[in-house]
Image (cartoon, rainbow, N blue to C red; front, top):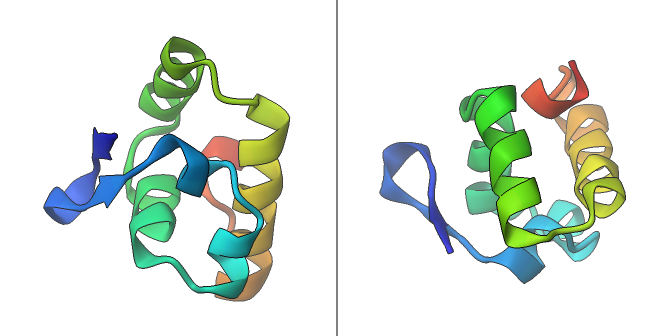
Length: 73
């Protein structure tokens, strides 16, 4: 798990799960929108999460929110 902004918890499966977008998972959204991109990248690498899966989730949240998530540059 990871503690993102506002002391929320994000599990590895949540971060890389497409359902996080359709469920409007606020923890995943907070991680992707509030945590600095370099810290997100380090977390993804450290935890062995599929970067492609997380990028897909970030793209989904970007479309939903109307602005680019930090990881997308």
